[in-house]
Image (cartoon, rainbow, N blue to C red; front, side, top):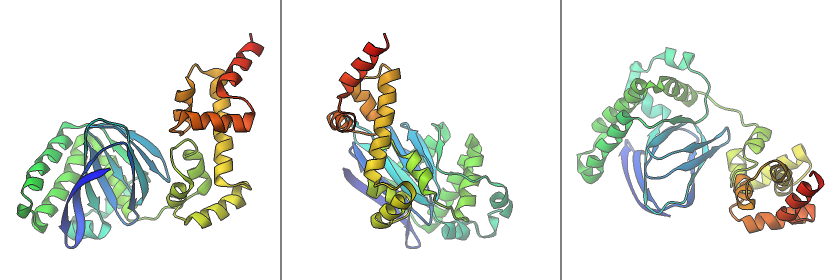
Length: 281
């Protein structure tokens, strides 16, 4: 649940925002025409995009390129603070005018999302914004321009120069979504078919139609079969509990996982493991 939000606008666009969140929650964010720097306090989170998935710990941050993201905040007894800086290509051009070096765009690598490890420099920068959230009348366009420049300079100085270069390049380029790659990446993510469709930048109906062409199956059947195959493998080779295997495969409910496993194998996970051990002693 999102309990409280604050934001600062720059020429009509939200440039900085803070959200107070009560986990667990999975929050969708669409950054189709922008990059974003997101700093997370007090909890860990799983970040899912069309290109990859990351686990971000407390006091770490993520640099996002243009894409759709699902941020899964994991269970925590405390409220979580998230601060995001939105990096629009046209705003960066306005802020930097001719100062944004063309060579940065030409030399940068192609990236997805990039995790920024805990850095005292970045933490202090985030802390400095607390004052402005408490005194919003002091914030204007000139101040926001300075803070965005400061953020980018700090990222470069804190040994994240490649991440910044990669982000800038991707703000000026387009990416091609490969449905097979997205499916493979998120086979074991806790995402519904409608969420995966969004990662593929498709409506649910279009996604199902294209999925059928590629796999001759429905998303639910295909993903379930692949998960059950991995479950069988883990039951044979690991000592993980049934609940741990369920979570590993993207199921939040171990009992639901057990029902699905039995539906596809005619055995419960416990009996399947016991029979395998018996036959291989």
